[in-house]
Image (cartoon, rainbow, N blue to C red):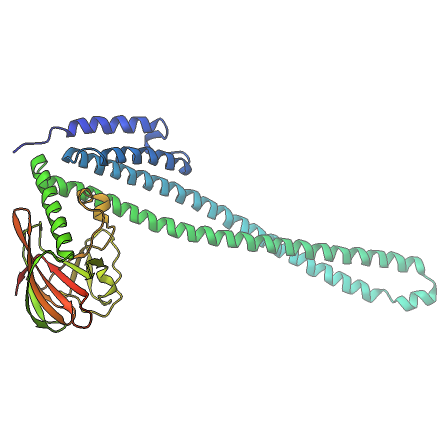
Length: 393
């Protein structure tokens, strides 16, 4: 067994990198959350260089470590945004409270002024004053009455301004609270990503035993599988028509454990129209019980077909740009997952999701033969489902 001797070199590289970054943000924590983008961009440039470098175990571990470090930085950034938002919300709560007190005080002043205005109006018998000729008294009281009415108008204006300010502050506070909720959810996802990245590194080291030869064999096996699946999609597999099957009929069983181009028990399920892969979720029905082992790949079935395996569904990898492609070594081999990887925790049996013709197929995948079955749809011959890593039933 040949052990990799490049890890100590990487740790030196990583600490040098971290040292350079500390010159920008002390210890990986910037004083201003808005400083992080440039900080993270410098790591992205390093990742691009590593991804363009030779496919080696040491480089892959560097990539995982830098991705992990990036996630830690994003966590620090999000935590700072949360702290700042919490302070802003607290300040807004205080301002709203003060404005509420001011509005209550102004309301009390307004009521007092209205009462004064009412009482004074009753004391000014205008016709009597005009008949008696006591104009001085009348004008003095009228002047005071006008002053009170002017004060009432000013108080109303102040009340309206205060109420408007309070409504604005409440709206801003509501927006900040919504933003805070999103940030808190983002923080939880980032912490989950961090744990998954650490787990991915541990799994890689466990699978390879820190051995470059084992790692290269894993890459080769994945490469062989990808090429075999691409050939199956275009109809290059050796196929034999078996019979017509109905929806829900048993057609195969999932191989248990390691098999050709598979490191563990799972069904690679694909849907294709012509030679083009489609999302299986566009056909499979929703409402199934499942456990997400994919680290958050989209699980959005919206069709009417039954699932090819019994519940509970262990959902290991989704369709398209998956978490594994972005964060693990499989991204070295393919950039798009053309099916879904699933397993059943209750049965190894595989069932046809729709009615059609059953074909048994096989294709060379490097030094082994990859077996699969295909069901061609009864109503649409261009539509087929493919079931890989199975034994014929």
